[in-house]
Image 1 (spheres, rainbow, N blue to C red):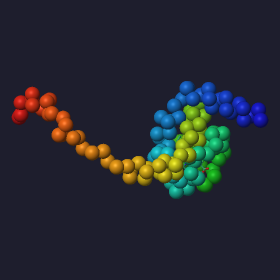
Image 2: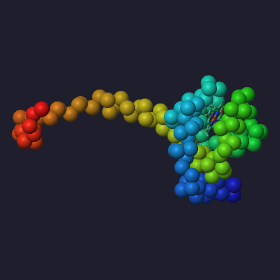
Image 3: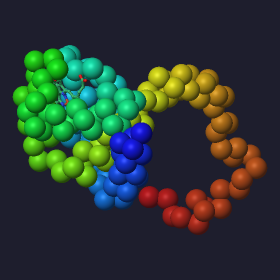
Image 4: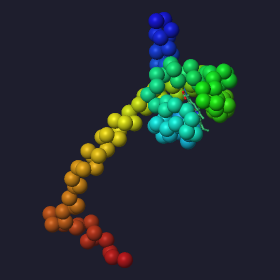
Length: 135
Ligand code: HEC
Protein backbone atom coordinates (compact mmCIF):
# COMPACT_ATOMS: atom_id res chain seq x y z
CA UNK A 1 0.00 0.00 0.00
CA UNK A 2 2.72 2.43 0.94
CA UNK A 3 4.48 1.79 -2.33
CA UNK A 4 1.37 2.56 -4.35
CA UNK A 5 0.73 5.79 -2.47
CA UNK A 6 4.31 6.90 -3.00
CA UNK A 7 4.12 6.17 -6.70
CA UNK A 8 1.00 8.27 -7.02
CA UNK A 9 2.61 11.15 -5.15
CA UNK A 10 5.74 10.95 -7.29
CA UNK A 11 3.75 10.79 -10.49
CA UNK A 12 1.83 13.90 -9.49
CA UNK A 13 4.87 15.81 -8.32
CA UNK A 14 6.88 15.15 -11.44
CA UNK A 15 4.15 16.14 -13.86
CA UNK A 16 5.45 19.66 -13.73
CA UNK A 17 9.10 18.72 -13.92
CA UNK A 18 9.14 16.74 -17.14
CA UNK A 19 6.76 16.91 -20.06
CA UNK A 20 5.63 13.39 -20.89
CA UNK A 21 4.05 14.41 -24.16
CA UNK A 22 7.25 16.03 -25.39
CA UNK A 23 9.36 13.11 -24.24
CA UNK A 24 7.04 10.65 -25.92
CA UNK A 25 7.65 12.24 -29.31
CA UNK A 26 10.76 10.14 -29.77
CA UNK A 27 8.95 6.96 -28.71
CA UNK A 28 6.09 7.50 -31.14
CA UNK A 29 8.16 6.42 -34.14
CA UNK A 30 8.04 2.84 -32.92
CA UNK A 31 5.16 2.75 -30.47
CA UNK A 32 2.75 4.94 -32.46
CA UNK A 33 1.46 8.45 -31.86
CA UNK A 34 -0.89 7.17 -29.20
CA UNK A 35 1.27 4.23 -28.11
CA UNK A 36 -1.25 2.05 -29.89
CA UNK A 37 1.24 0.01 -31.93
CA UNK A 38 3.42 -2.98 -31.25
CA UNK A 39 6.87 -1.43 -31.52
CA UNK A 40 8.74 -3.07 -34.39
CA UNK A 41 5.97 -5.65 -34.35
CA UNK A 42 7.40 -7.03 -31.10
CA UNK A 43 6.38 -5.15 -28.00
CA UNK A 44 3.06 -5.17 -26.26
CA UNK A 45 0.79 -2.21 -26.89
CA UNK A 46 1.65 0.14 -24.05
CA UNK A 47 -1.18 2.70 -24.26
CA UNK A 48 -3.22 2.64 -21.10
CA UNK A 49 -0.88 0.37 -19.16
CA UNK A 50 -0.60 1.32 -15.53
CA UNK A 51 1.95 4.06 -14.95
CA UNK A 52 3.81 2.11 -12.30
CA UNK A 53 4.11 -0.90 -14.62
CA UNK A 54 5.46 1.26 -17.45
CA UNK A 55 7.88 2.96 -15.08
CA UNK A 56 9.19 -0.38 -13.87
CA UNK A 57 9.62 -1.55 -17.46
CA UNK A 58 11.52 1.58 -18.42
CA UNK A 59 13.78 1.30 -15.41
CA UNK A 60 14.36 -2.34 -16.28
CA UNK A 61 15.30 -1.50 -19.84
CA UNK A 62 17.61 1.28 -18.71
CA UNK A 63 19.29 -1.05 -16.26
CA UNK A 64 19.56 -3.68 -18.96
CA UNK A 65 17.67 -6.24 -16.88
CA UNK A 66 14.52 -6.37 -19.00
CA UNK A 67 14.38 -8.18 -22.31
CA UNK A 68 10.77 -9.22 -22.68
CA UNK A 69 10.63 -9.91 -26.41
CA UNK A 70 14.30 -10.36 -27.20
CA UNK A 71 14.64 -6.71 -28.16
CA UNK A 72 15.46 -5.20 -24.81
CA UNK A 73 18.63 -3.78 -26.32
CA UNK A 74 16.55 -1.45 -28.49
CA UNK A 75 14.79 -0.07 -25.43
CA UNK A 76 18.03 0.11 -23.46
CA UNK A 77 19.21 2.61 -26.04
CA UNK A 78 15.93 4.51 -25.87
CA UNK A 79 16.00 4.83 -22.10
CA UNK A 80 19.71 5.42 -21.61
CA UNK A 81 19.41 9.20 -21.55
CA UNK A 82 16.19 9.35 -19.55
CA UNK A 83 16.23 10.56 -15.95
CA UNK A 84 13.95 9.06 -13.33
CA UNK A 85 11.73 12.13 -13.66
CA UNK A 86 11.58 11.68 -17.41
CA UNK A 87 10.54 8.05 -17.05
CA UNK A 88 7.87 8.93 -14.50
CA UNK A 89 6.48 11.62 -16.77
CA UNK A 90 6.48 9.20 -19.69
CA UNK A 91 4.83 6.46 -17.66
CA UNK A 92 2.14 8.85 -16.53
CA UNK A 93 1.58 10.16 -20.05
CA UNK A 94 1.41 6.72 -21.68
CA UNK A 95 -0.94 5.39 -19.01
CA UNK A 96 -3.44 8.04 -20.08
CA UNK A 97 -3.25 7.22 -23.77
CA UNK A 98 -5.74 4.35 -23.49
CA UNK A 99 -8.42 6.29 -25.32
CA UNK A 100 -7.31 5.16 -28.77
CA UNK A 101 -10.39 2.98 -29.23
CA UNK A 102 -12.73 5.59 -27.80
CA UNK A 103 -11.33 8.25 -30.11
CA UNK A 104 -11.95 6.05 -33.12
CA UNK A 105 -15.50 5.32 -32.04
CA UNK A 106 -16.16 9.04 -31.70
CA UNK A 107 -14.89 9.96 -35.14
CA UNK A 108 -17.68 8.52 -37.33
CA UNK A 109 -20.26 10.52 -35.40
CA UNK A 110 -18.43 13.73 -36.18
CA UNK A 111 -17.98 12.81 -39.81
CA UNK A 112 -21.70 12.30 -40.34
CA UNK A 113 -22.59 15.73 -38.98
CA UNK A 114 -24.24 17.77 -41.68
CA UNK A 115 -21.79 20.17 -43.21
CA UNK A 116 -22.51 23.79 -42.51
CA UNK A 117 -24.08 25.63 -45.40
CA UNK A 118 -21.56 27.71 -47.23
CA UNK A 119 -21.60 31.45 -46.57
CA UNK A 120 -24.93 32.86 -47.52
CA UNK A 121 -24.02 35.58 -49.95
CA UNK A 122 -27.60 36.73 -50.31
CA UNK A 123 -27.73 38.23 -46.84
CA UNK A 124 -24.23 39.66 -46.70
CA UNK A 125 -23.36 42.60 -48.86
CA UNK A 126 -19.79 42.15 -50.06
CA UNK A 127 -18.62 45.43 -48.58
CA UNK A 128 -14.99 44.62 -48.01
CA UNK A 129 -14.45 43.34 -51.51
CA UNK A 130 -16.02 46.38 -53.13
CA UNK A 131 -13.54 48.74 -51.55
CA UNK A 132 -10.54 46.76 -52.81
CA UNK A 133 -9.48 47.51 -56.32
CA UNK A 134 -9.45 44.41 -58.46
CA UNK A 135 -6.09 43.28 -59.69
C1 HEC B 1 13.40 1.97 -32.19
C2 HEC B 1 12.04 1.61 -31.81
C3 HEC B 1 11.61 1.99 -30.40
C4 HEC B 1 11.58 3.23 -29.83
C5 HEC B 1 12.00 4.56 -30.45
C6 HEC B 1 11.03 3.05 -28.49
N1 HEC B 1 10.74 1.74 -28.26
FE1 HEC B 1 9.86 0.96 -26.58
N2 HEC B 1 10.04 -0.89 -27.34
C7 HEC B 1 10.60 -1.21 -28.57
C8 HEC B 1 10.74 -2.66 -28.67
C9 HEC B 1 11.31 -3.42 -29.85
C10 HEC B 1 10.26 -3.19 -27.45
C11 HEC B 1 10.27 -4.65 -27.01
C12 HEC B 1 11.55 -4.82 -26.16
C13 HEC B 1 11.72 -6.17 -25.51
O1 HEC B 1 12.12 -7.11 -26.20
O2 HEC B 1 11.48 -6.27 -24.30
C14 HEC B 1 9.80 -2.06 -26.67
C15 HEC B 1 9.20 -2.17 -25.43
C16 HEC B 1 8.72 -1.11 -24.68
C17 HEC B 1 7.96 -1.24 -23.45
C18 HEC B 1 7.50 -2.54 -22.82
C19 HEC B 1 6.34 -3.05 -23.63
C20 HEC B 1 6.07 -4.51 -23.42
O3 HEC B 1 6.21 -5.26 -24.40
O4 HEC B 1 5.68 -4.91 -22.35
C21 HEC B 1 7.72 0.02 -23.00
C22 HEC B 1 6.97 0.42 -21.74
C23 HEC B 1 8.34 0.92 -23.94
N3 HEC B 1 8.92 0.21 -24.95
C24 HEC B 1 8.33 2.30 -23.83
C25 HEC B 1 9.03 3.16 -24.68
C26 HEC B 1 9.21 4.56 -24.43
C27 HEC B 1 8.65 5.30 -23.25
C28 HEC B 1 9.96 5.05 -25.46
C29 HEC B 1 10.48 6.46 -25.64
C30 HEC B 1 11.39 6.93 -24.61
C31 HEC B 1 10.21 3.96 -26.37
N4 HEC B 1 9.65 2.83 -25.85
C32 HEC B 1 10.88 4.07 -27.57
C33 HEC B 1 10.95 -0.32 -29.56
C34 HEC B 1 11.08 1.05 -29.40
